[in-house]
Length: 576
Image (cartoon, rainbow, N blue to C red; front, side):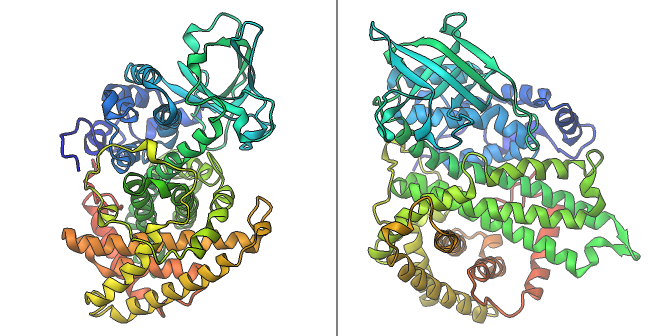
């Protein structure tokens, strides 16, 4: 474990950006909405992030940056996303997406070059997308072919790419062989500043409904010369590198987007306590309190999933291929459902694009791409599906459980082991194994005793049954069932699997909170509500009534709101 001091961090960035609801804050929601209406990146926000040195968060510590723990990185970026998701993606996360490929596959010189560019304030864009092929990378037409002298020349188009015009360098996925299959593509690190005039041309910017400030554009490469030294890793391994990089980006982005729900909850609670209805605050209505409590639970589930998966990237990196897709699918669903529910509480205020609550509609619009951007939720199911039969037949309850540090937010883990990421977990899943062991240890240790013992035991029994039923169903899958044309009934299996991983994350974070003496997370009420939410979505009965628990959870939410504390696992003190 590393204990070296940090520069930057989420608390420092929160202080730098200030209270987003303060009307006098030049970095608050008011100026953010003005930039959104103009469909431009928030200029004052970009300057503030540059002054903070946010690009250092994308560069591994061994190359002069601040990137160590993936979960720490997520909390830093969450501070940006809870104010302006467009700024979070457009200023920073797009450079992280590109950078991960360089830290994964690049040689020492390429990594040093990328680090120098980022630490110097430049951007790097990941140029994968081609409109005719979407996320079908094997269909990529942009090609790097060799001329008679043997030099690579890049030709073709990349479209709807974040920051492709503003970036100094690009990580370009290009076809380098006419052979069919995934070994016909490579990634190239291209420095736009050294390309000859006329070798690239800007394509028109594409406007969006959500993330309107994000600069989505395209480039056309016109017989553009690139040296052999531009190839990242082994020629022909570009798609494999991309798939391994997704294991980190699919894990990190949902965790950052938890900041959107945090702000959505904060705005909705503010309205609920201030607005009067029938002589009482809106928050006095039981149905409103229940909706706010449920959204609070969705945020805790989401943060458990994202944090555990991020920490697993350090301690269980060989299994990240399935965990990352599960967290992207599971968390995006919870966040979208919760924000949609909160919009009903806001009522007519939800439609306003300015004023005290105008930020809510922007946050919801900016969250929508979480269901399809980078990798659609259904694509995540398709990615998980082929691994489920192997996991089930080898018995996911038989292997070693995840180490306890996976479930202890805030404990530092050292550098990210990029080199240990694999395309398949080969039948190992320590997070799901930890669900069975966590249930056993909770029962043996007496933590299912007390006033909530009956509900906990009932939920844990249902989780055991679900795990076994899912294991049997997945073990019976045939090769014909697990392709991209899998029927909806089969795709429900990875959805159930993702929910079980979420249950494991919640149960074990709760258990380890007792070890760490964290009173807010030791409370069994949030765990019961979280597990009940998950098992009922699996088709299980859950517990009889959550109304008293919702009242307890709402009181916790109201307490955090009044104290200006975040609603996530960290209960961080916020400006305001």
